[in-house]
Image (tube, rainbow, N blue to C red; front, side):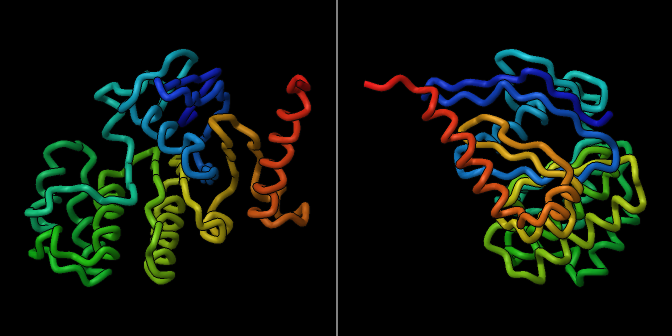
Length: 244
């Protein structure tokens, strides 16, 4: 079991509430996380990372409570902004992280850099946006994580960079079938190419959790299925409201 969530809730002073959510992620799962902006995707990922504290419910990652030091080394995280030490070279970033993660694979990181033609002496802050994403992904994979969390990493990037990311993830999961990925993205076509399952959120609520193979075989394009699921949930909500 990679991740187990039961009746998870997180609320904010603004009135937004995520949950209650209940789901599990097993080794080998590649889960697409779909929802509009503000639906709770980033909040969920931050809860899984231990950055945020839940209000209630049960949450375990890799068999431990989130935020525990011994599981952080087994989690790889990549987001849209790629916030790293911009003054460091990519080589120096690798050396820095090698002291933080006991499973760090310096040879794999170097091979990744050579594969994508990235100068290890170039400052991270001076890289193109596409290369920043490439380096961020390489830094995450070189620590050999068991759980990879991706929060809109490919937003605004060209198709070639997005394709390279998907290929990297497929290769990594082929080499380690016990690892799992939770991939948040608005680019539905990318999720359809790699995900084995989809979780959909709307206004903080889980509206769908099912294998992607069923989605495809049922004849529904993933995007259309999302729209139908949201409409069904919102129509149900309206039908339960009292008339004036």
